Length: 165
Image 1 (spheres, one colour):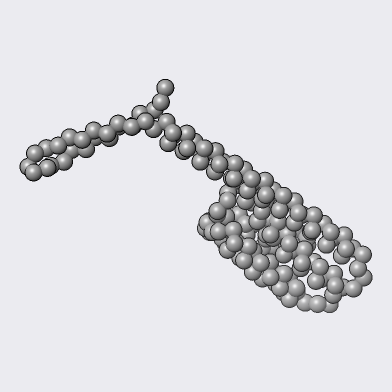
Image 2: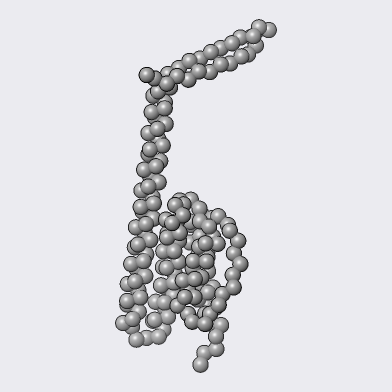
């Protein structure tokens, strides 16, 4: 049994009311719409899986950098690797957030900034951060740029805020 769509139009022709009724089979159209919806769902699921894999890849890279930094004696090289770790972790945090919120096109900047700040200050002792970030939804591209800026600001604050002994 097919689906039927009907349209009724009333309009004037030479001073007379005309009623036009169109009836058509919409089964094929409905099947096409359903297939489009399925395709969108499949693509969204593939994108979520890709986000998850990217997140895991960045976590692996972070771990590899950490392992390498433990074998290096130079303090300057360790600092460089530490900053690199923060940058890579910020991108990993972004993909974690996208995956957890099941979002594709937007990131809650407040959640993302909170995540970056917490991961950075967790490795430093006796540092307290007071933050005030509003909930703003932005694109993942813009969020990654904001994350890099935040990492640089916090790492510079940690690096230069305290007297060196």
